[in-house]
Length: 117
Image (cartoon, one colour):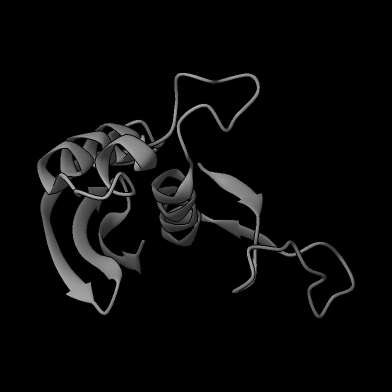
């Protein structure tokens, strides 16, 4: 079972009502790990420089290549413990941001992840 520290909307760990560090497990933990994988930049992690998404090369280079970003996103999400498959990913625009909606099947059931870059 996946169990980890819970994070708030600012991606910070926090103290739960019981006075201890908040924890999350099961489907919410897998969703949190998916969201972390989607945000991780390539070479950002000191001990895993081959992990993460190449945002500069795919999105921030002045000419976004959604196909390459899609492929990198799928690789990152499929590495998350508890993820079985990605059923669909769709992309859109919100001003200068690129948005995504992803339907993922996990060992705990289906989940939808939304975000923007």
